[in-house]
Amino acid sequence: MGPRRGLKLPDSEIAVHNLKHHFADLEQQKATSTFGMWLFLVTEIMFFGGMFAAYLVYRLSYYNAWVAGSQTMEIKLGAINTVVLICSSLTMVMAVHFAKLGNRKLTALCLILTLALGFSFLGVKAVEYHGHWVHHEVPGPNFHFEHEGNYDPRQVAMFFSLYFAMTGMHAVHMIIGAGLLTWLLIANARGRFSTEYNSPVEMVGLYWHFVDLVWIYLFPLLYLISHHHNG
Amino acid sequence: MSEHAHPTIKTFVAVWATLLVLTALTVFAATLELGPFNAIVALSIATVKALLVMLFFMELRYSTALTKVAVVAAIFFLMLLLGLTLSDYMTRGWSSYINPFR
Image (tube, rainbow over all chains, first blue to last red; front, side, top):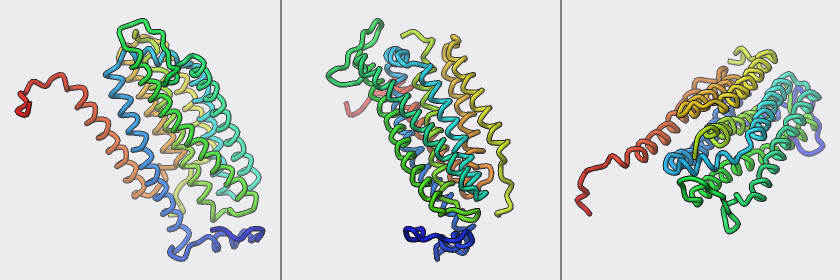
């Protein structure tokens, strides 16, 4: 790990201090970190992929109920959150950029902006969840769906189960991301990164963009594609 | 290896602006009645957005060949998961063979 608490290293020594003995040089270490992070993201793709597969199978089987469930979504809130996440991806990429340049102040600023946008996303999501709760759209004993159309309301409960599973897992990833960003902010303030050593910023960046990627598919699937169809 | 070209702030802002335009486009497309094409258009736009994020924000364009292979493999296996699952569920009604175990 990094230097002991309170121990300040000059910039020139940060890289040397963080080079693990089993790597030939920092470049090899960084390439390994990047590959390892992507391998983790590959497992994440398959994890979310399972839920996407379930969503598609049920959408085809319970099409009318799926349309009815999907039309309860507020496209405006979903679109705002999409914009918020895209902006947070820009500030994240800027944080990585400034970390590579060794600019600690701008790295901190970009990390704070990313964190603020992340919490904005979660705030909007909380408003949406509250709306679903109030309208008895949360599957369970309180679930109640006024249906007009050729489908069983339990099928709509299935839609909402998958909706909460997918957006919920996505939100959990956002919360973990917020924790990682906070950790980066502290490490950055303590001067643990330099122009030569900044892999943690880059790896958290990859993770944050992956979370954005998941939302890029969740938004059209849950909010958009059934907007104009008849249930 | 370290001499790879790296994207500039200009590239990031251009990608960000494109992502916002594509978001507006996909929301607009949802207001049109396109039948089955609503899903196709929305998912195509999402895929363009995903590619932009992966290539530029995640710097896949500038990554090692090994990393690229891992990502392509992931997409391949994801397609296998979705494709074979759907080919099963969507064709169950076609079955007419006599089940010898029934």
